[in-house]
Amino acid sequence: MPSGKIIKALSGFYYVLDGDKIVQCRGRGVFRKNKVTPLVGDSVVYQAENITDGYILEVNERKNELIRPPIANVDQAILVFSAVEPDFSTALLDRFLVLIEDNEIEPIIVVSKMDLASSGSKDELDQYIKDYEAMGYTVIATSSVTSDGTERLLPFLEDKISVFAGQSGVGKSSLLNAINPELELKTNDISTHLGRGKHTTRHVELIHIGTGLVADTPGFSSLEFIEIEAERLSYCFPEIHKTGELCKFRGCLHDKEPKCAVKGAVEDGVIPDYRYHHYIQFLDEIRERKPRY
Image 1: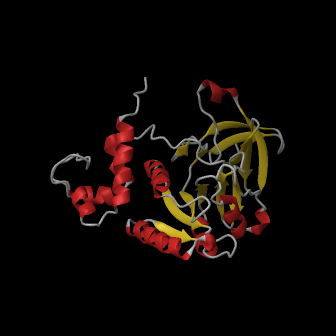
Image 2: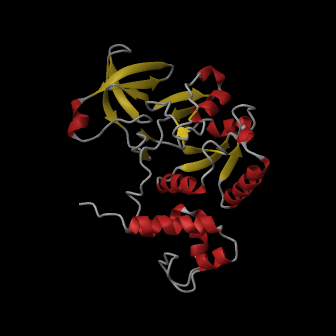
């Protein structure tokens, strides 16, 4: 039986990439019975008499999956956050990072619209970039207008499935167009009334950029920590987890325990105040989460 990768799901059809051809498929009823929904990024086995009349027979095991946006087998997440319009937010970035880290997906931080930042805000952004690089993250400053930084991002996309994510209006589609102008992805400006971006992408689709596949998605429709337990949270903050290994008590959650190495590192300026503040904020949010039955 032939096999391929789902690169688009739309209106009940799954478009399977098999070599240099794309086969339009439907899912067999067995998937509904087994509560398995094929996702973009899935490696599948299918049968088809022609390229417009196929059926997916089997979904191979996934290495990871995201529900909102619905995509599987992601190698890395390109987290796009604009310098301005909307303003750069470490709180929102850290929320995205936690969700990506929890799914064991490699994150790359991209700061877009650097050409619009004032000299004062650029100094602040440069400090944030240094902070996140010190934590071990790759951070790339870009501008879709001047194309600055896009040449540095392109090698990271080669031979990988990448999902572009970030707040609406930060310029994800504009950035992809700057990398590959032939894409001609639809973009919209910031809504002056709402002060935030308008969604331009309506479905998940994998598109070729170089030798890689990139998902332009409608964005994360949920940023809640539904699956993350309190004990797991520190693993999603690399610098907190590493420092936490020096804590006096095993299983320290770094909030109320005495002689906590993490709190000491915050006081010494080794861990940025805002990162620890977000960690405690997220920890409280998880603790207050209503139990699921």
